[in-house]
Image (tube, rainbow, N blue to C red; front, top):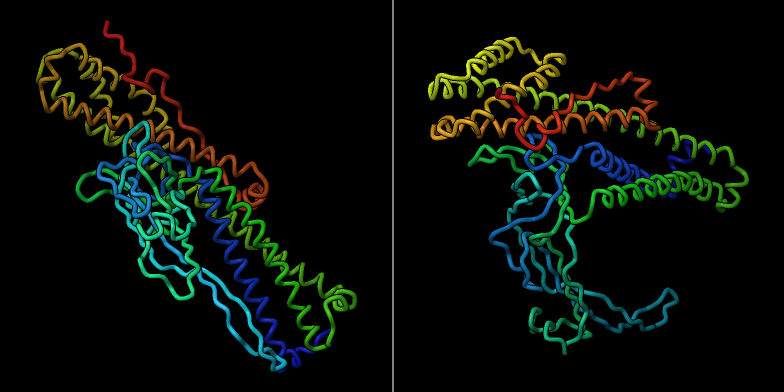
Length: 452
């Protein structure tokens, strides 16, 4: 075995810090890549109308009325980067280690011009539009220009500088990457309320480090991170095994083959220590991931509660408008009184929430039916305004319920899959129960109401 004192006092042994630093870098990179991959997998996709405060994942198409013009292709864009590189080649003389004069030819590319520009834009899906502020986001754009040409090409001087660099071969490479209106994109990032209106937007947040805008699909994003999560630990293991190889080579003048033959237990112990270290990090990552999914589930429940309380505030106001416009619908008044009583006793308990989602639909449906059967009420602007808010609230409740059920499904899947199931059993993670689905008719329009 090695003498610890000799290791500490031998200058050559400092070479061992190189694989140590490489190994640490690999594990830090693995941690970040794997954590982001699991976050993408764990965050359910929200519809635009269902985006709430916090981390959200949305998919849709780019919409912009006043687009930018890219520099190279002059096409419409909301975000773009471009660069122009020029190739050079030169022959130089040098003195080798034996003192002899020799010549060599070197070549490469030098960036001679570049730029970028971006603007806010909207992401659109079937439920609406969502403002996206790309500042501070990690952007994965598509390549719109990738061209290498000589001076005879019009773009060579048309877009590039007139002067050539030293030792130029008169070849230039033009590259442009862009996000264009109409492109389908994937966005995961923090949402907050806009300043000018009470609508959400996705923008950079100092308290939330994950913000990605990509032209790739969710499956492609997860797949690329999965490959990195496999490669980085393997590279880290090789770096760990290089530590004893270097130490024995420097201190005992052994080549790697001799070290593997004479010190198999040392090599095996190093691999085992690295494996245990990796397993420990992975278990921490699994635990933190399950905690995040459970917290997201609790947040989804709170979003439903907020919308239910908003509904209880709207229904009595709508009832007052109906009562003021006509002296009918005694049954509606009775049901609204019951709803008001339920609102006063609502404590966000699971049984309250389940019962509320089922029993309030007839009340909402009755109000919607009144709107259709008594057109004169529509003249009342207060009623119309409150009615529109009620419809919006019902849509938000449906989306929040869908978000909750998606979050619950993610947690349930995690709790049943290996290796998450091990952590779930050790720390007794439990999943909740799905909220009842709205009737099929209620998913696409007002609930059916019998006015007879």
